[in-house]
Image 1 (cartoon, rainbow, N blue to C red):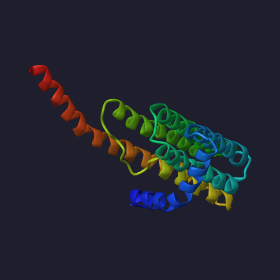
Image 2 (image 1 turned 90 degrees about the horizontal axis):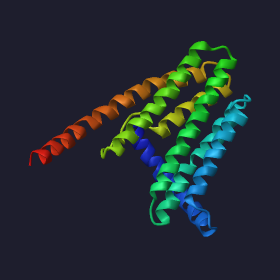
Image 3 (image 1 turned 90 degrees about the vertical axis):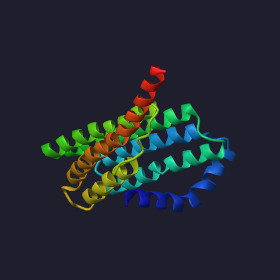
Length: 213
């Protein structure tokens, strides 16, 4: 269901994003510049707004800048396709942005003295890195792992909902979000490993067959 929602949302946003992408290209802006600008915006909103208690504004601004993922990808497609460096830069900037968001949540929870919330935030931060690592490592070995119940878009939505809840006075919003996300991250890691396993067996069997020839 999350995948269906994500695909539908991307299709709807394409009508807005593509004209923006075309205009930026006409101005001489590159997809890589948009990627970096989006990350700066996310980090600035997380730290400047979220960490100072402006949870609703922080969640909304982070969401806006997170949509840059759609803009730079569309720009790359319109410019003739993504480059290897662009893909590397995009993944790197995503990890920085994710770290800033979850790190800010941990900071907020620590300031409230919510120890279990802090533990959940740390677990969430580590597992989020593992989710991304499994995919990257699989792709580096020639396999695919683009599956899972909680990919990046879902993770940002969950944290954003936690921020909105906290902003409207629900004290447990952030803690609930990080623990919920931690559980979903574990499920996602298992899903990705399970998805890669038959691919790995097939590739290993092919390798052994080549050696035996």
